[in-house]
Image 1 (tube, helix red, strand yellow):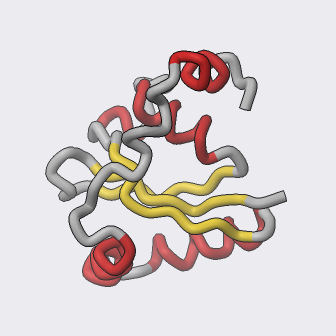
Image 2: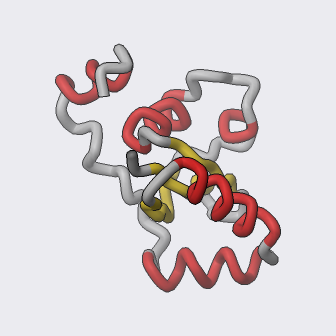
Length: 109
């Protein structure tokens, strides 16, 4: 089963969150909707998905997450910029459909 490592950023890109999940669509929705108001991404308004990598399994995603968390900020910035030079929100069009949004909210995906 695939798993993902991802970066969420705030509006000004000065705060980064590194996460791991087996359901990227649902997890990004949780960050965007601030489902858990006490978490880091809600506190610092990290609602932009600026980078993600797919791995073959959750174990490899967790190993990659640990590696990325240990990186210097400049290395993380370079990785994001290499794949997403303008730091656009990669999930901007993911939730346009109300049906998809409802499925995500109801944990159907």
